[in-house]
Image 1: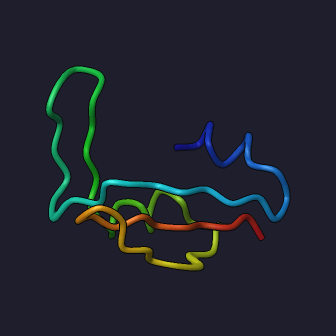
Image 2: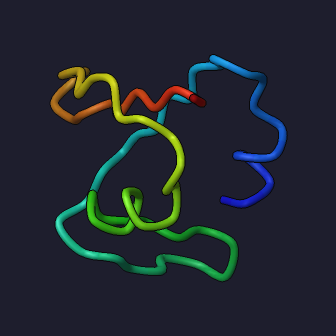
Length: 64
C-alpha cells in the first residue's frame, strides 16, 4: 500500500475493489482487505466516494 501512496500524483485518484467483511489471504500473493484496513493503510488519502459496482463496492481515494 505504501507503494500505491508514493506513486499517486497530487490530487490523483485511486480506485480499490473488492472490499471484504474481514481481512483474509486467499493465496501467497492475494490479500483481501476490509474497509477499516484500507482506511488504516491509506491514512493521508481522502475517501471521496463509495461506488456500487457489479455487486461489490469501489472505494475512491484522492491524494490531498
